[in-house]
Each structure stands twice: as structure tokens, then as C-alpha cells.
Length: 274
Image (cartoon, rainbow, N blue to C red):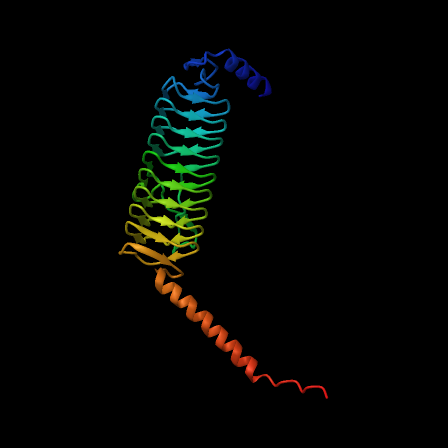
């Protein structure tokens, strides 16, 4: 194995830097523009860079001007649009990616969603089929170590110009509209749906099968447990209009202060020293 790696390294160094492949043993070839491994059936534009350590599997399609970083895996049949950039260790399976996208280190797209049930007859846990796709639009940026699960009963869809921070979970069958912003640690439950121009603060979440309409802003650490049908700002758990949440917080603080004062008044005062 070490000897084989040295042979591939020599081939990569000898390869032309304008694209094309250098033949190696088996079905995979060393890509001339970067030194990565490319399956013989993959369709890659010569202007695309595939760095050493990246692997492009069978029937994948990559348009011109893309950059595939070291350690990336582009799975069978994956399609990537023009001028998209994958940083290190990105994993793409069962998906199509638009043009001018940026995926940061460790992004995973197209793996199975979290779907299980208990067989009432046997008591065993059974995995539900997860056999559909992820479809990502143009100009999408996804932060490091974010995961986007493939669909089970419908494709998981991310619209154009969506910006997703690090460590975000997008469950199976989720639909995200255009121009949404998801901050770090956001979680979207399976089959939830966001309209266009939705902003979600850090650590906020949307429960499964819940729909959020367009032009909604959700405060950090909020939990959306029922549909939001009117544009506006929302906060709290369960979610409520931001103004209502602020009023509740103020009232809770006032109540706590009154209770503290009443307890202090009931305490017997110490006798003063003569």
C-alpha cells in the first residue's frame, strides 16, 4: 500500500496541469489537474481541480472551474455545477449541487436520515428506507461539519443563495427556500419546511413536519413546535411572537423580584446591639 501511494505521487507530479488523466491500475485514474483519483466513467471538465487525496466515483459529473479539496469524496452519480468549491474532507452522495457553491471542511451531504420504527410483532428496531436525493441550488454556502440528510418520501431541497453556518443539522425531507440564513447549531427536524428569507439564530430548532412561512426571523435558542403562518420575529419555547415573549420575560422577572422582596420582609430582623 505505501508503495502504491508513492507510485500515484510520481504519476501526479508527472501529470499535465491543464486537466486530463494519467492512467493507473484499475478503474480509477489520477487527475492531471491536482492529482486526485477519478473514475473512468466520471465526466469532469478539464478546468476543474481535483486535489491529491480526493476521489471522484463512477458517473459523477463536475462542471468547469470547480475545486475539489484533498480528502473529498464525490459519490456515484453526484452532479456539481460550475465554479463550486469543496474544501477538505467534504462528502457528497445522492445529491445534485448547483453552481458557485462553497462547502467548508467536513460537510456531509446525502447520507441516510434518522428514520426508525419498532416492529410491534417482534419488538425489533427497523430502519426505514432512505432512498431519495438532496438537491442544492446555486450560490449556497455551507459551514464546516454541517450535515444534510437525503430524503425518504421526498427529496431534501435547499434553495438558491442559502447560507448555512457550522454544525447545522438538516434532516431528511426538509425543504429550505431561497435566501435563508441558518446560524450555528440550528437543527431542522425531518420533513420541516422553511419559506424564503427565513433567518434562524444560533441553537434554534424547528420540529419535524412543521412549516415556517417566508420572511420570518427566529431568535437564538428558540423551539418552533407549531406552524408559523405570519411573517415577523419569533422567540421562546414553544415559539411565540417576539413582543409576547419579551412581555413574558419582563413579567417573570417582576414576579421573581416581588417574591424575593416578600420573603425578605417576612424574615425577622436581628436585634440591634446595645
